[in-house]
Image 1 (cartoon, rainbow, N blue to C red):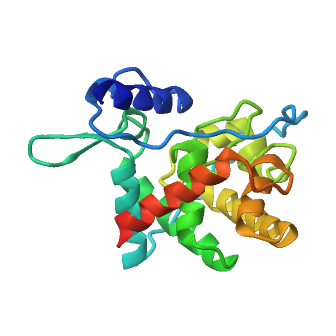
Image 2 (cartoon, helix red, strand yellow):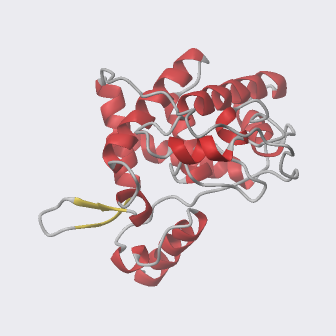
Length: 235
């Protein structure tokens, strides 16, 4: 069993470009990041002056539902526990430029807000973020999909600055929320439109991953399985 867990952690670490070592700490299996999409990267990405910084994010009130989701995120990114029972999160998360658990709380808040605006289950959007990026805002897909829900630069992410602007995206990593508000808004709207266009949740998820209405992609099952895991953790 230990070798299977180590292999799963190694897969996650590779997908998130994390440093070696997480597998050695592993006692549980965080989700594996997924990067669907096949189109070539967008050309002529906009440049930004160095002084043009992302806006600071003001403190926000955190609801019980957001706290439960943030705690579920931390549990899913836990690779082991210390003797006192405290969590050891993935190396990429705990050695990032900001406090990891504070960032997970902010992601949970942004996900709840975007899901509410687009009449989606927040656990569904959260499951997508886990499966798409492992909640790593710096993750880039093979076709330069970016953000925690991996927007495609020539698809949903065409007009999203975080996706198109490398310099801006790099500076965003220093922010607790990593400029993911717009990313999640566009991702939630894209999923909502896909569900409406394709006539159901499964086909809508298939459209999000591939651009086509399909209910047979393995991606769909992984996202729905992740949602059920989060549901159990947030009860």
